[in-house]
Length: 154
Image (cartoon, rainbow, N blue to C red):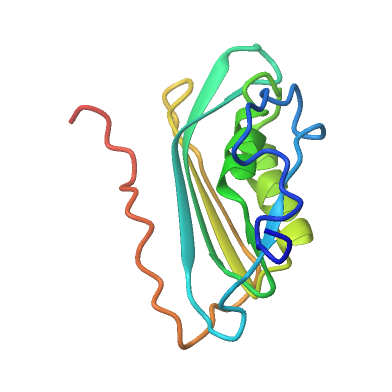
């Protein structure tokens, strides 16, 4: 396993505790085995939670991460633990969404990244927050994120 792309990963295949804060969370990377080929990777987190910084009440979102990797892929278990670290984190929707995207860009260094935060209503108003690093590569198929605008029960 000396030349394995999994070498150096500490969270995959072992029991890992949920980080207490996003700053404490470790995002692990693996080498992209198809670094010479452009392709899209999508992660969907339909049950993201954080806390309102004013009331301390829980906020809920459906997150969608699309990225075209360069040299690194984010390891999925570490991404899951990173997102779970927001469970007790107090921040506005915009801060959570953009902060997650910026950290992913900083650590992954993707060719392109798009991040959608589709927040469930609080006080009757849903908030959707979107982040993108630039123009999408022309040769990549990028499907719609598939999250409809909020319509309530009507």
